[in-house]
Amino acid sequence: MAARRAPPLPILEPGTIAGVDRATAERLRRGALVIDGRLDLHGLTQDEAHQALDRFLAGSAARGRRCVLVITGKGLGDGPDGTRRGVLRQAVPRWLNEAPNRGRVLAVMPAQPKHGGTGALYVLLKRTREG
Image (cartoon, one colour):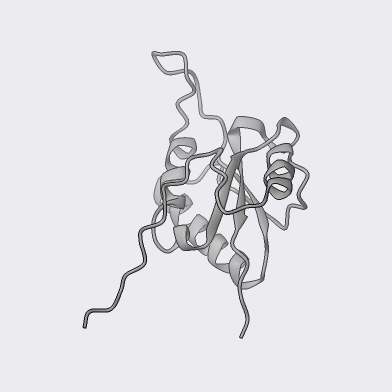
């Protein structure tokens, strides 16, 4: 008999809140959760940033951190449609959805202006269960 596979996790777009109680979701949205760690990706190449994000999330999860801030920057200049073109700003949500990161992440929310606004993301990590 074949082993049952868990259904794939839904894609997390910034602003996605699933599997989080209403109070926690609202506190995340308002930037009111304690930020347990920060990762600033400014000045890194895409490869460097991807590796740094993977290491940071693995370490944060292992340390039991719950809410971390990932600073991507807003990008330089505007694209032809008037939107910001930050390469890392566009790549980080994609990387958060890739294994093994997706298994660690519960929710992603754009940061409040006091924490970097659209150039940063709050990442709510899953609680680790002991035992």
